[in-house]
Image 1: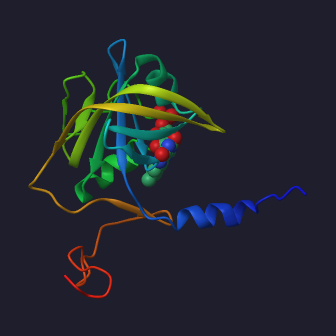
Image 2: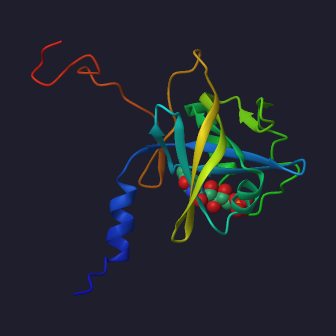
Length: 177
Ligand SMILES: Cc1cc2nc3c(=O)[nH]c(=O)nc-3n(C[C@H](O)[C@H](O)[C@H](O)COP(=O)(O)O)c2cc1C
């Protein structure tokens, strides 16, 4: 029996998974590429691996497959405008970082300042994922910024940030600290 999922139920279910927001970057032949991405996941601590998923039609997609290096800027709440900008189809490549505070990492990729943390990766494995490609990367650099602490979140097509609950990470099941 073939079971097919209802498209709107599928999208609705995925939209109810709250995520952080990243801007992933690469550089190819001196041209910087970028893309807002929520499909970012930690994979392995030892060795250090993470993954991102890129739609095959995004300009970032072909560039990152060729370059083999990428940065992940995990956005702070302050990065909301950058998130919208790097999700905007057809923005000019050459000037897309002009208004965005940034620096370059050791691999040469752009890293955004309005971030809580950064990773630099070398592509280790490429997996076909339907209309997306999954890139698993070996993490070759990482850093955190301690003066910002509120993440940019994405939930049901809206941006937000966190509310810390009174029962936070120090509370374990059963209420015993
Ligand atoms: C919050 C948010 C998360 C997104 N996450 C992804 C993602 O994980 N993978 C992806 O391929 N596109 C994602 N997109 C869409 C891309 O950012 C967008 O299609 C791309 O930047 C278009 O750039 P281009 O014109 O250079 O191809 C996301 C968009 C938003 C607003």
